[in-house]
Image 1: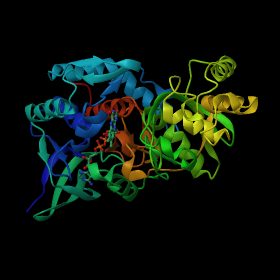
Image 2: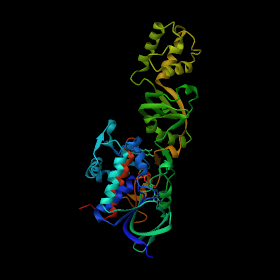
Image 3: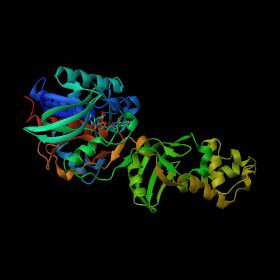
Image 4: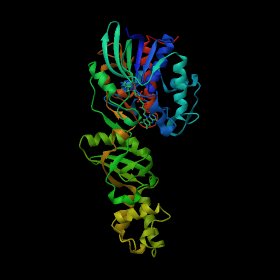
Length: 421
Ligand SMILES: Cc1cc2nc3c(=O)[nH]c(=O)nc-3n(C[C@H](O)[C@H](O)[C@H](O)COP(=O)(O)OP(=O)(O)OC[C@H]3O[C@@H](n4cnc5c(N)ncnc54)[C@H](O)[C@@H]3O)c2cc1C
């Protein structure tokens, strides 16, 4: 039996694949776009984004917030489908958005499910043929386009397509559908795939000396050092864990930390627990406390100034143990040591928490082999790639979904042969 033909087949029913299918079907009309998803449902990862609230874009999306061999690659996609244009795209589907701090954009109901719901309704309205439980295992060039081999519960099946959009995402978070399938498909077509590393991920660190802080959160400023040189500073809520550190500022600089560790260089995190204060302001304050609270035991010397557990950990690290001593006995060196540690506690980073816990993959299909104005392959005309499968990853804060929407929509539009009427 002859395989069904579709002018466009999109592989991967995630964020960028759904956007591509909607855009393509908007131009070609119903019944002409096929969307193939290996999971039981489309958009599973989307439901987990932004802690279930889906940080769907960021007002400040621009190349400097992206990483990969050529972050400028995002430019044409953002010029064609800007943040505002993507918000309009959702608005036309009935989804309103709200802006929170640092330009982060969320759906108005603050539920990722709302984003997925409107995308599904739109796929339906546009007459996209969505097949779930269908994993594309091979792409080969055939008469008038491509033949896709697919694995389903019922066995192997085939489709023919004029154009193919590879929107398979990256390897991060295998539990939510991350896999290396997209890389394999593109590689089989002659594309080059770089080494992949986790990004937006928790970091393992030598926290033995501060193990009492496990489970505690601190609003702090973190500076990442590459062999002692500062490379990135982030501010936000740091969480100490039994394996290392987590929390938004850690996630934000994790991509750079992973790259340093991958290069077998020393990566250190300096934690500033009192970012509003300089060390010059802090030391006199501690000297004053020594005078004021001289008969207090050291275990409570910092109580009322910084969280008690933090104060105790810092005093121990500054060599002031035993904490049964009286505060008045603190030496000048011990006080200066405490001030230094409160402003710059060094933590040696050892590894990331791995690809399975990462939100994003850094690395992927080499962007130089694709045309950024269309997302079409320069190696195999008629093949397009979108989203995370490409060597582009964004900062934490809505940048990755912004890239998924814009690159997906651009590929859908280009594959359909032009702009929607
Ligand atoms: C926990 C978590 C939270 C996140 N939060 C945010 C956030 O708040 N904001 C943000 O901007 N980004 C966030 N991200 C990142 C963002 O979700 C991804 O960057 C984005 O989904 C990538 O879109 P994509 O279309 O490239 O891939 P995906 O959305 O991963 O979609 C790829 C799809 O392709 C399917 N697939 C793969 N191979 C095949 C095949 N061979 N055949 C058929 N189907 C296949 C997969 O099952 C999957 O459904 C988060 C990620 C995680 C894991």
